Amino acid sequence: MSKKSSKVPQTSSKDSEGYTISRFLRDVVEVVVPAIILFLIIKTFFLESRYVPTPSMVPTIQIQDRFLLNKTAYWFKTPERYQIVIFKPPAQAGAKDDFVKRIIGMPGETIKVHKGVVFINDKPLAEPYITPDRAPISDSNAYIIPDDHVFVMGDNRNNSQDSRFWGPLPLKNIKGEAWWRFWPLNRMGIVK
Image 1: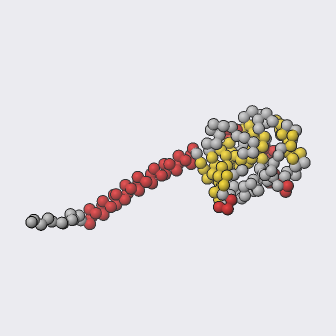
Image 2: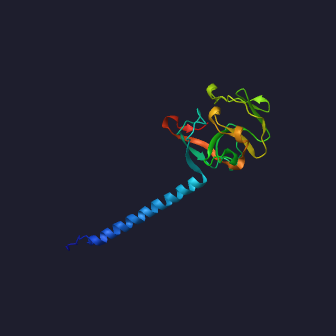
Image 3: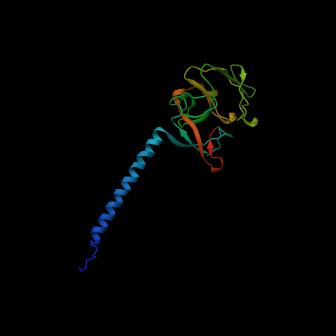
């Protein structure tokens, strides 16, 4: 019987480290680079994390709530009444940061606020998300909402810079819909 040698090939420690480091770097590149690319694609075209720094949407959205902005919401449909949208404010608003408000009036409608009640085409609008202490104190002029515009208001009517002050919002300014609140955890869920 012949004895078979069971020797394991030896490599120098230098070769072993070089292989390990190069293999590690290759693995990192294979995982991290696609992950970064995927993240940038999602953030640019689909979803973006947002937070609310003001009380204009209280009680629906609290200060410092964090949610996902759905950028695809209006690719194939138009915004609807009661949806909460994120938009670039018009120049008349005198602000550069995006706003978060609720769509109240649609193109072609006449809207006004009288004694704390919003009227659309002279009919009171049902607004179950408004608490009595958040109803507007002041009245507003009547606005006829032009085509390709909506009328937006904050749910905290007495602490909201909105369409009552700068008029109807062009649809082209809307960046997407406030979709999923992920912070705080006890209020996680669909933003309505």
